[in-house]
Image 1 (cartoon, rainbow, N blue to C red):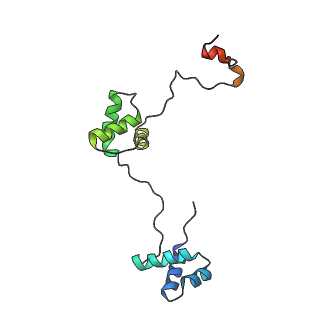
Image 2: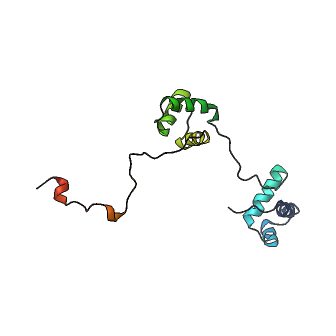
Image 3: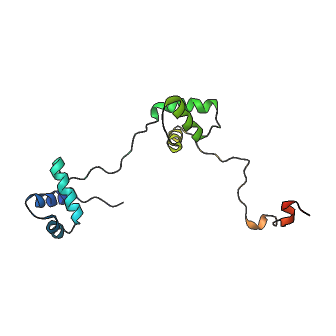
Length: 141
């Protein structure tokens, strides 16, 4: 992701526009795009500062108040799917949550994804048996 321009440059550009320079002239002078000049000067007029808004950051979890319910539900029935949990949250509690959001809460609680032990991993092509003839597969003789 690209870094934001420094607040010093933003302030100088916005100040130049406020003093009467055109946006195109200011863009050429400071070697930035015209759209940046326009946005920075608009931001300075509306908020009093041309500084960049904060980038990134950690968002709060909206499902955190329902964490206890999710853990109780999994204790009662451990093999329930995330999509079913999402549907039950919507039906019982009126909470619309995607299965990924539910997974994040469960992962933070210490759950992990385990593959089914019955499934076998894909082996190399050398170890497989030769493909059967079409007649054998269809059952016709």
